[in-house]
Length: 142
Length: 128
Image (cartoon, rainbow over all chains, first blue to last red; front, side):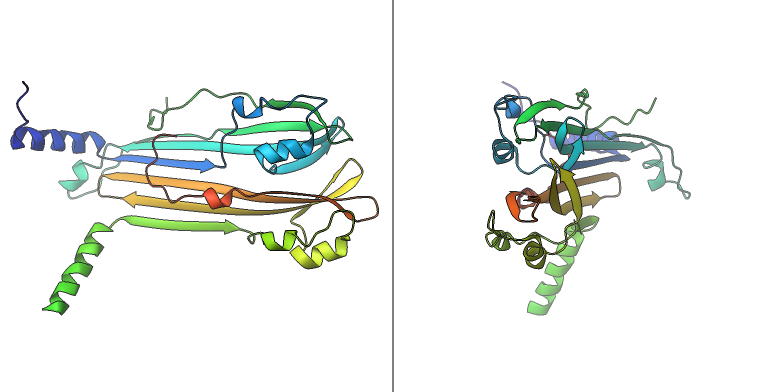
């Protein structure tokens, strides 16, 4: 049977965790809700109408006219930014404030578009290119 | 004694909220849903729509029709700036209203989608 951790072990673990996270900065900006391929399975070009699309996905963020018809655009994004300031810990002990920061920000705007014919029936639809999933903490900029 | 307790309580609250940032941002005015019921399809003219909801934020043309686009954005962003770690999360959502007019300038269709009621003050930046 494993013995419970002693207060000294717990304190050392806590200090290690704090040192590990020192100088860490995590930012995230989420714009609108993500639309997945499962969410758009109900759309059948030539059959589904604009009101059905709006009923299931909500009102689009933009509508524009193209040569193929009216285009409805749904936008969303998940921006992740992380930074690590290696000068954060020495700052606690040194009389000056050293700074050595690595930062990475991934802005991933995504789009789902639906093209309607003059009768407001879906002519075509598609997603913007699918980006690979980025981790929330990834500060290495190289 | 109660004054000392209140002071201690206030100091404790201040100590625990150090480094907290709560921000909120809006673009435009919230769309008044109750006014949408006054727009009757095939009856309400453009001028009445403008007097009910106001001038549109954008006018789009599509399928030989004028489409009025109204939008509203709401952003909630809590942050925690501690001595060693910073966490910031921002949640932005939008409401969109489209009023479609026929060639005679009569409202033909109303499309409304509300997302801002799901905007959250959520600090934890990890997970979905």
